[in-house]
Length: 394
Image (cartoon, rainbow, N blue to C red; front, side, top):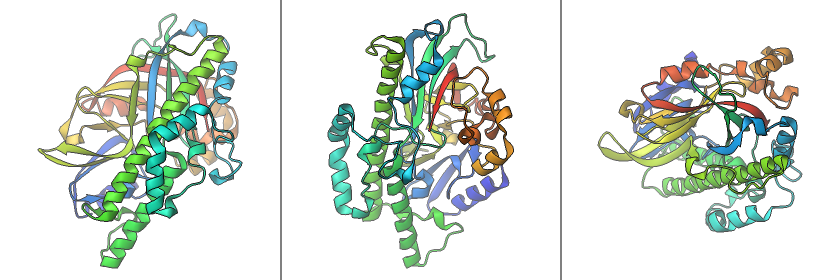
């Protein structure tokens, strides 16, 4: 752990109303609260402890396919990229290639069924939360560490594979621009409230809202809406990825995945949970629910193994595990440190974009997923071990 992580934890622990903090082995610096942490409160909400990509998480499922059926990986990647907008241009505004120009019918249907009413209520109450491209970003990947992967299932944790392994699809994304807007807005409102009250914290980013106030109730309502947006965002992308795979293989995507084995989870969110004998608010920032028997997803870097897991319900960890490997280099440091030759060597055997824009996501920028999994053996149990063969990044 970098010393700055412990500084962030000490600052968080000093906030009145923070009862318990659990730090995951992938923890690294975040905005206000570190990424890779879980926090229990009863009477306060800290928007920065959720972060600005509210509802960010992952979905994964096995397909009714074997590795031998995927002969043309470049075409497979291209067919997926044609169906899922990735990246971000023009600050996410008009002309953004990472958003829809013409909305697909299924995106419209999901918006109207699950999200439109909540969005109208939210923006009527707080007009500043209006984001003109909210619907255009639904069903899109975004940038940073968000990804879509086609993976093979390894036979065991020694990375051996059977002769013709089964195929999985896994993707990672969140609530896009609207989640950022909700998170940032309430972080600033919390700061303004504490300033008005004369409350001083060691880190102003950790400003809190008091449970029972209108602001806290609004934050919970709209954070939960953003979590629904992120959930539907992933479901739409997953469907479109399957359509891309079907197109590449010239088969129907209907029934292509094993729906009963789908794993879907948030890792940036707030929820009402019971801990240490009483109800409270559990905030996970870059961390996965690892309650006993609950399935989770813990990816490595874009060149390392990933794990489908089953939680062990450890109370002291707030029934939480890591959400990935965790960075060891900031993006700026990674761009200056990792060269293309090193990056290509680390990604051998994987079909992916080979431009310099992905150097900050190279495996060397991340901790060892094996070390992270070993460090949390009492928190969660690996069930499936995956290794990517196709990576799509924003």
